[in-house]
Image 1 (cartoon, rainbow over the protein chains, first blue to last red):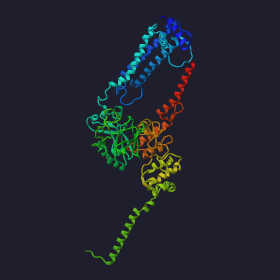
Image 2: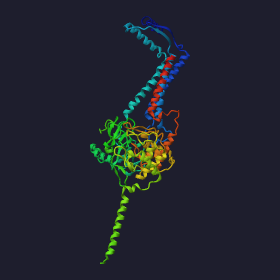
Image 3: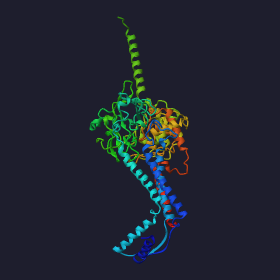
Image 4: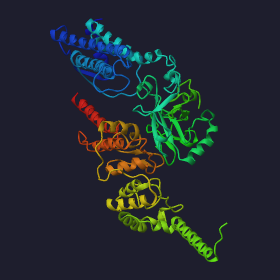
Length: 360
Length: 257
């Protein structure tokens, strides 16, 4: 069946059965002309580039350094450029370029390589009979032929590039998430307060400027954000980002009340030092710093989703989406009168829930 | 044993009596409340007492001892707390509610300081260490670090304030003077935690004050800071304006083809 006869089928069927009158039809560029070949090459070039950009996305997702602390940036944010800071931009740029190019290629294909056509159609009611469906099938096949993939093998090959690239890009994230095992090493259950981070000795509490904290440094109704004074000196950096605690000195009668409540949450018994109490600063809902301390109402608020924890009731969540208590860091004094953590939150993991996290 | 004449014994007894009377009177003078009331107040404190007795006494009571159910005792709160509460118009408060808000102050700064002097001389407590309106210049960069650790969770990174529980909120720092910032950190008004001198040294407080004042003097590029509230307002803005722009772009494309 030649192209001509198929077109006649289409025009005849459209006119007599569908009431669609094709009043104007001509190829955009003369088939086989120089201009057409140029457009084909342009579209193919864009498709190839799109595939390349998608492959760059996959390669960057896998190999671009984003956790190479401290080799590139150290454990603390430093101004200036480094490869690590390019991670997110390179992902966005490459994927954006891949999608933009494939879109642009399709636009040019439609504008320059598809025939010009004007068709008029009256509305009709009801479904179509088998004969009409046969005509429709031929019409669709004709449209497929109009793309000219048979005549333009370069485009057929070029289309494989974005298909492969974008397919891999779409798979990269879900597959990537299955590869890393969070329990090796088991960092979800360990923070910088573990004596392992300090050569087996109990870890001192320190300010962000690495000065240790004495009990009298916290005013009544006052708070200090405390970091673990680990042996490697990186306690206040991103290496121990899950470790900060809020050290609070309660008013004496509030502290008395909390002491009377500790046995309701037995893991906290003996965790206070005098009127001082330390809770993990990492919200148990989504991991934001729950550090808005209301000293009159004894509430700890999380600014992200408005969770509220009652300090004097073992940091029980009283409002908002959080459903677990903030873990209490058991504290005492060391030989030189500085505050230390007796152990690592009594083994209670900090932060948001995960599958294996025990109920608390 | 030495014997004395009756006359000598009478003289000795009279002297003992006199000594006892002087001792009793002296102790009474030292410990009686009226003795405190007559302890000399400085001129500023006397002015402050006059203001106190007309505007504060109904809730905070005679001699700042507090009135059950109306107002707390002010003994020991110090002049810093008084100056903060009065200068920002929070005191005198009209009524007790979730939050006592900043308003047009009833007293000027000089009167606030006189009230502060009076309360300070009554019961002692934290004081603002610098005399003038402006704090000694501090290290802005270090202040920024301390602000982000200690202040930004409630007052937001730009000092714009934010919501707390049950209708309370952390106020904006937009109107705060150096003295008010210092006094707030030192005394922890309302639900704000206290940052005593062991926690943030006076120098660190100056650093924070310099940072906050520097932050406030920043201009907003583009002219509209969106309250500097961050991603929520910016997201809302781009949603409203960006979506409208996209809708018009779609209309334009449809019109062209």
